[in-house]
Length: 615
Image (cartoon, rainbow, N blue to C red; front, top):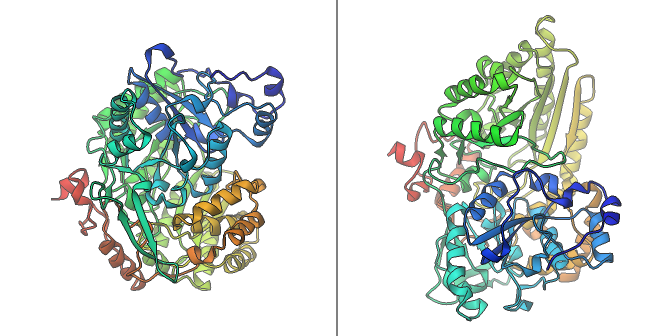
């Protein structure tokens, strides 16, 4: 069904370009020649969703298929949603302005736990039943993937199936199965049966969860022998051979990351003990510099962008970074295209890298020491020192930079107020480095922006057993640090501890949270990651209404023998390894990175990437 949106409505909302489509490099197909329509949904506004590389990749992968048309859908902002509900306009796609309830698949990417109410709200806006138990064969299949899908349980009541791991291959296998099923006349259940044994597919409806009297999980088991006991994630072994778009959509409006994104590698060699991405994306697999240079040239020609960002979890760990940067600057500098180098570690920042990053335009620099003391940096396995940070700051200031961002985390396991003091002391030492830099070299107008997030224990990390600090404790630490950082040149910002608390609840939640999510949605909760729309009191009402204690999920330290809601998911990294890393944290013992020594995390089972290189 084609949806008509009047000019009057578009003219009455903020940023109408969020809803118009027709951007450069959008894909359009003859609907008479496609048999599968896939609505790719990002549960946040256009500017954030269009900045997500994974969406760009899968949009390209699906639209390479002649039988499939993938169209984009974003969460309408509150003003547009109000107009849509008043005028009975269902959620629609950008490419053809079709109602998503007429599609074969509605697929969500789950990047952040605080988007879960947006997922439910978008299903409701679509005009299809929110609960999967109420949907029939006439309704689309609802699927999801992304990092949050590794603990899919809080959304088990709403999503038919999840794709775990990297979607480029698994999504094509699902589409192939759908083609076979579509003409069979069989039930929706039979399609889920068909795909349940595709590696990387998790159908929560095929699994039982039993609980102990204390609320912990007794067992998670398949309902029949034909379903796998463990669902193993999918990975791409050779990134040079996998499809990567050489044309990307160029928005009409500003987006968060409005530039070319070159993905250098997947995975991370470092193993910071709080970082979920560092474990769930293992093993490290790199693209060759030749392939990246080829992609950069094609993308620049097809988009006209004036900035290329090198994307990975830790850019400076790319083994051919020098050659790549040299090749990119030789090609792009004459075209006035800037090179952006995010995710640089403070122990590998160099004058050479800095010079390449500033050849066309100078932007701010970001460093992430994460903790204020060396003791706590060893606990979290950060592997950097105060000297590393100050040396990097000295190089930056001597090169003309004057704006530096410093990211820290508060509430980490074993943290004391001395560690909080260390954040303030380290920040002031950065200011002192600037003051010692000769005036003819340093830039004008020093600004040291200190930001703290609150520790959130995440699945598949060594800290998945740890308790989160209470909201009151986090607020006390933030207030204490604010007093310590008062003065010239330093600006301090922090993350809302109420949001961090709810993030922790959902990150380690089980199926019982489904009814809380539904109740919170009914109370008007959506855009929970946006401070002005976050309604903490309504969330607490929803927990009380459902008889569920959120502190059970966020503020409780687990024992090593507890069964987690995600224990039937296999990311390669073993629970035994994560336990060992947790124990090493309390002894402040550093684990070397993967290039220095293999520590037997379990990712070798995937037979690819750095694991093969080291064995």
